[in-house]
Image (tube, rainbow, N blue to C red; front, side):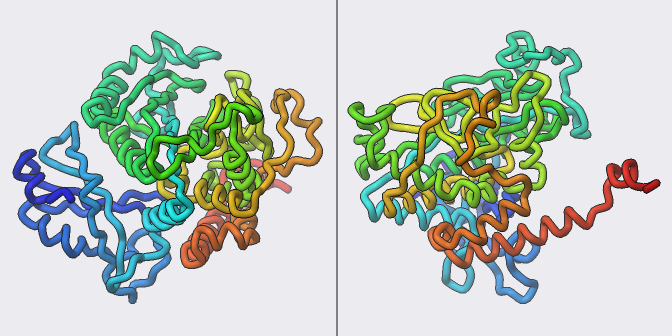
Length: 434
């Protein structure tokens, strides 16, 4: 186990950010001087849980965020500071609703069945003006801006700096591009165990925002920050391996699309619980402006609205691009890095245990011919529908943990209630004179 005090001495670190992620995906931290890190590594840093988006009251005892030293990262853009992910505990017991704890529990459940879930994510983001109201590059106006060579080079300083940092951190970044919306980018790094991917995803969001601010810009992972443009997805690539990490349990060349019977039933769990898991993969009011969006300027939303799967076809919720893995195209940029991985494992394990059938494979263009599919469930139209679907899915709630599920549903319902009580300009413009 890494001794954080020794790490500080060796690397010249002055401060540690002891960080945890709350139910709404907010990243919370305390800045701890290196001289105090030994005690913090042992006992944790104290937080008032109610002051963050956790289901607690001011009367709750201190919540302690105990750093996981295996996750420590020296900030490449500010080397005197190191970031470390933490596990939340209260009065000696793990906080069951804390997202990283939810994921760790499900990783352990998979290990009991002899399986290691490995994932990669495609985290898309926009680079906006500091006010967040418009894209930052006035020249980025093409109707089909995806992979635009000039546009990506105009933001070379930002993208290359982030990629250089990922190279130095050993993440194995392998491509960066301008995405399908004006002002939008995607950066990819190698897949790994689900918890490692979640920690890196969490740090990536922090790093992108920090580097953008350094360059006088604002980065956002908001699902639909600009009306009419393609939204920010966060597609997840999923495979399951034996515990040694060397044998892909999803791969079987003799089977359809090279997906083994195990892989097919894991996929069956994703399909079975899709409408409920949307509440975690698409967790905000704004998320449903991406899923149910009209055609964008570029000609397609690149987001699903129906629970279907296919081969190598990007118009469905799940595609199987090659043997031994599949891509879940439902999640968006607002997804909590830990809950995204947790709900994938929960739904997949449910499918494995019940030998769930993923249903028929469709190879049609869902954007052009989706109306011909009559028996596939539709994805939720809004956050309220998604919350209700999760509440009705007792199996998925049990897999995720009743304490977590109850807290998440309660707080998301409060968020929805806050949203619908807001008086909007649309109401004034369209109903003032009725």
